[in-house]
Length: 469
Image 1 (cartoon, rainbow, N blue to C red):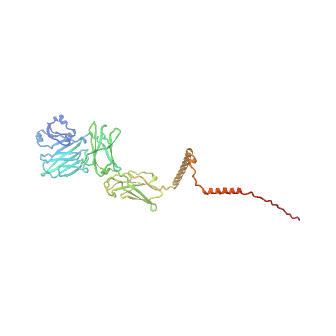
Image 2 (cartoon, rainbow, N blue to C red):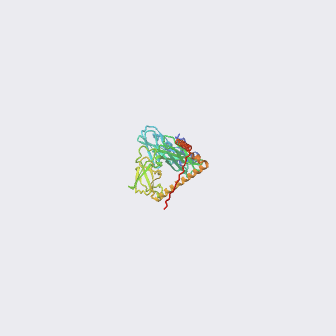
Image 3 (tube, helix red, strand yellow):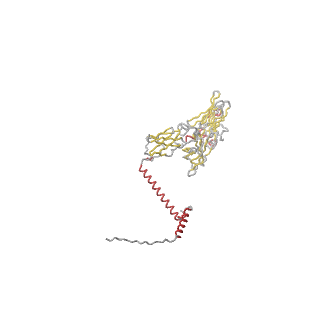
């Protein structure tokens, strides 16, 4: 008959209260107590198969002590601890706080130096500490939603010892969120979006948490965006600060049908920022030299300290306006510069051009993705004098028609609601003293003329003499 070493487990929140090794027969593996061990623990422990004649050796040999620990419910995971197989190991009571990515342990002797590590997939982060605590910072940490191995190593009396904690996520595969992404726009606004897991039950609800530092508590999303059934599919943040830092994002879920896998990610905020357009764009053209000088200032950033020269790369899109072409996201033929000025050659004053500029980070801690295009700026002329004359005549005609229409409206309003006398009342004139004087003089002259005696007329005789031949 074959025997198995069964690992008894404890389910405290963060630490193991105890563990032991029992020898059971193959028939006893169907016992209800054995089946109480979660499936993920059974898979990880892979019961130690030993023969009957080695039972005592297995019991007394202090096989590696294992313990399966339930983690806080928010991550739906367990931790499987494995300590060194020597009773004289200075490393004991190894515990892991996944929320803080913090390892702690006890030591029966004085060890001056420990080496702790975090392994996620093929990536390993090593850290040297000089006390019995090891904490991985935001810049060192890796996402653990696919599992992770934490380890502590030490050397005492030329003997190597180690202890480890294996982090094992729970939940049905395909239930965690998919296509999680975030973008920062307009300097301090951020949107995070995701899709429901392909195998997530219909009643699954997701919750987003974020954390600036492992020393700080996690904060939940302030403003969720819901789809038609009411499921959270996005989150919006306002007044985002410290864009130059790395932030931890955690999305977990809940359902009445099954456990939901969590998703976590570390994101450097400056890498997801959508840069605003360059500022103060000006164009100065010279027909004699057939060129235009374009100048601008770098985009506005909340975390840029000091001079921004040399931190950006700019893309310039200049097109003939008659083509009516809009700037493309992949403007492969557009010239790029690192200065805040550009000389446009082969300028034709009889053509009209449209100018747009966008920017991305070059050397500083600035997003390497192209930002927003600036608003179109037009310069030059369209080179069609007939169109210009037509436009001028059209404007004059509209002005004339408008004037006539206004005059007619005023005329009819005045005719209906007021009289011309009220509208154009006589203006009072000053009294003319000289006119009265002339009137008095005329009256006196007439009076004197009437008082004169009548004139006597005398009759004259005229005799005509005619000579007779």
